[in-house]
Length: 497
Image (cartoon, rainbow, N blue to C red; front, side, top):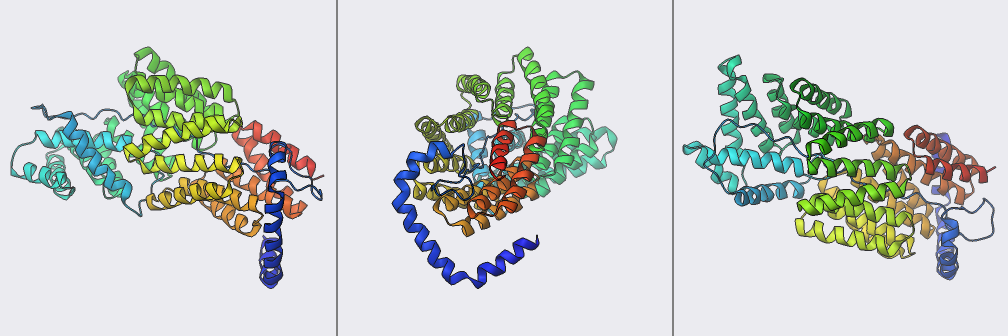
């Protein structure tokens, strides 16, 4: 935009006296901090009119993280009967290998949880443990030492050999490619996707291959490809009259619809998944569906319904001992408490989530808890603590290459800078946040950031720019169906008249 380029030139030409003004603003911030705390409740819903002489905080929509419970992986089919390796040793080895994934940098992943990848890897380890012969033994020894290359070579060799035998051997070849995909994920998402794609090509009826492929396609942000893969799973489930397969596919399709901002479609998918899982008494599936429906209710501003759904999900996860599901639900309950202004309860939920994530070594979960704790500190006016939490979360998310997490941390750091009166830094952070959300196609994130840019221009006194940002944000929230924020933005836009 032309006005943006002109603004940058003006800021450069006037940098010296602007620095002096910033210093004066900082002093005023300290002097009036007690007054601002008294007014905080009022200003959360009523932004100061342009030109008001009352010192008030600008309205802020904080980027929030409401995690989607991960839909469980469909068990893989294996063709070799077991001598019975211990579950504990298999799970421990999978944990060790997956820990290396979360520590690696440069992975193009939007990591929420690696539960599905771990489940697929455990199945592959079990298959490898059953095999005999020097190649299998050597591959297992290297895998136990953290090197998957020998195991990958073994499954690639097995897969290629079976594929050469003709159509009759394609099903088994596809299973070998699925095992290769689980191992390849440790080093390369693209290599894993290639293996799963080959498996689905050899055996178009292999629901596990389509499911794994779709899951990874979603992680890298290719929503159209992911939707196609999960629709294939849905078709197979219907054709086979496998209702558990249908429920799993519906859950994934609901998560994709939510990512696109189509909340009505997402709700339809998750309700259908819930109905099937309840009929089959599949408690994990019920917990996941309830959590996903809770996320939709929270996005729409229906906090009572969201809380009820989360508590039902939490009870099931506690009964099953699913710590991953428990920690996601605790984070979401903390978000509800935050929105209600119950900061002590919000902090308690998020500290419990942080403790569990630290015990599990789940870095992506740690980052989410830190962001939520930062938002609570900011709401209390403790900007230094808030900044520390958000910076720690940003560092973790950058190490994980988790772009969604990076956007959330940057947006919240922008809120802190705006609260301090450092508007130039806030704008730079919001622009970085906006760029990431646009790349990811996250309509809600785009709308939140546009709203925050609008409120920034409100306190700067630029009515035209403020209106442009706020109207764009409002229209996106209408499109998504988040009407509580539409109402809030309507009020702010009216105050500009």
